Image 1 (cartoon, helix red, strand yellow):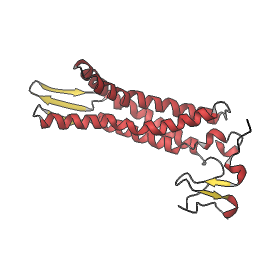
Image 2 (cartoon, helix red, strand yellow; image 1 turned 180 degrees about the vertical axis):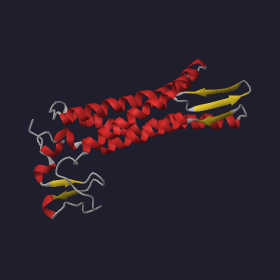
Image 3 (cartoon, helix red, strand yellow; image 1 turned 30 degrees about the vertical axis):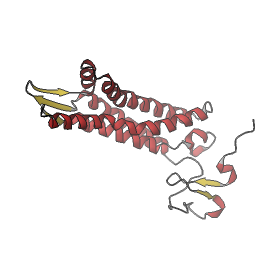
Image 4 (cartoon, one colour; image 1 turned 120 degrees about the horizontal axis):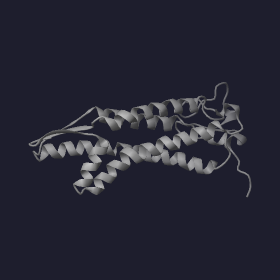
Length: 210
């Protein structure tokens, strides 16, 4: 099997914003994308790893109150009750709605933890300039981008539950602070994934790949 040829070796620069490919010889001074005028870099974007780490730590910190604080308050004939994410999963499970419980658990627990672990692994391997499993790590990064958008399923379920209760006159459901923190977790992890330049995986021999 022949060795892979990288775009930098061919004098090509790819724009991370619009994906347009420009020849390095066609640029002068600061390399700019010919389509969207974004700054181009021959290697990974400078300080990409630092920005990803900062957003990732922020997401981890916000994840604690997102799970500890109530996300919804349900009030009806029997009184009112605050519900956290995990207590809501347990309530749906006991009520026989296993599919809804599984969706909420996957969107609220499995997806965020997977993103935390995956981004942490990508950062750790990039800082170590590891040459092992680069193709697999590239696929892992694409997976993180894809599953990130499904984290908002928990917020959608809370909104639908609130609307359903009020529509059937079974009671009222109001959002609580936990849902705000959870939305912040989703946003920060999405920004963390967007801040990570996948070229950090491949630019293992470049000084600016950190």
